[in-house]
Image (tube, rainbow, N blue to C red):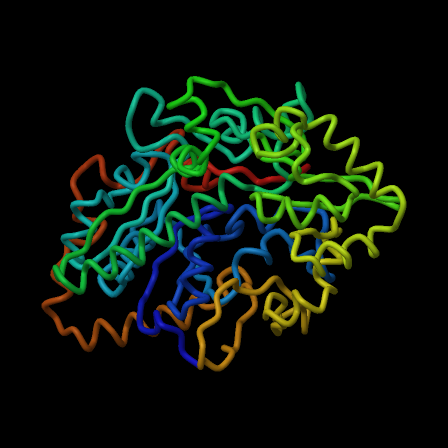
Length: 426
């Protein structure tokens, strides 16, 4: 069944994580995503591993963020490649890029020209540290950003800055990029004009600081890492039972009054009667709770706590998550037919729409798998538009200085060093 973005065409020049994650989300919603890749190499995540799957050594990393897309190969340093990109732009609704600041301009496609080609085009641009400012040109991979933007300072055991086990800066940027595109598409229904949407890994992480940010901006307090505990709420974190650990979250007074009797505590004990007091006496409270939890198993305590309406949960490994009946009941595991691997399972989209039939998902494409198909489609679109649409100057007609990148810019185009982190070793 078609999704709500059926008919929207997205030209995806991005690679690695933040851009491809965003375009995958838009593809899940029904948009046609045409992934433009460098001939011979493609998105560098195609080479990231192990693990690889099958005789062709397909990267499982690449498979995780490229479902429901088409792949074409274009050499953006060549006249032919730039001419084809111009044709794609004329027939697209959205262009997504995450080159270093200025690379697309030096390729001959500054925003002004993009909107000359297509005044209704929405341009989404993702960078590491932002598009301007004193450090706007810096490359900013995910791991670098987790350190620079403060995530590591509030993660892990006290005194041991730790990286989150996912490419969280990229993922946050992808979410902001997706919402920005959706807002721009809606705005276009009113104005009839395209626009430029900009976000960065830095903006996305700082925008997610929430209470850790206001602890500094309002209270002047520098947050520190507290391990698995919550910095301001207790009991809220990981607790030891007889045979392992569970998570418990007691975030308000009603929950506290349900929880306290279960672990043989007096809800009105002056040490623990309010959230600030429980937080101030966290170590003593944790010891009292774990003394009670030690008398039974994780399974028994989870049944008891959830039965009383107290939020509590297991600490599952990744394989346990994907074999969990609840995960599968939510459509979070999908099957696709891959050209070389056959039937495989992938993480599924997080959104569902009431009344909509489940869509048929497609596997992440092989490099250049759809080049012929997309070029034929462009021929059809150009024929429908007529000769007037072909008056745009070709790459050969462009002014000197816009005939493609050299030096570091050429390396940026080839390698896609776009401000994102591969996320290996997490």
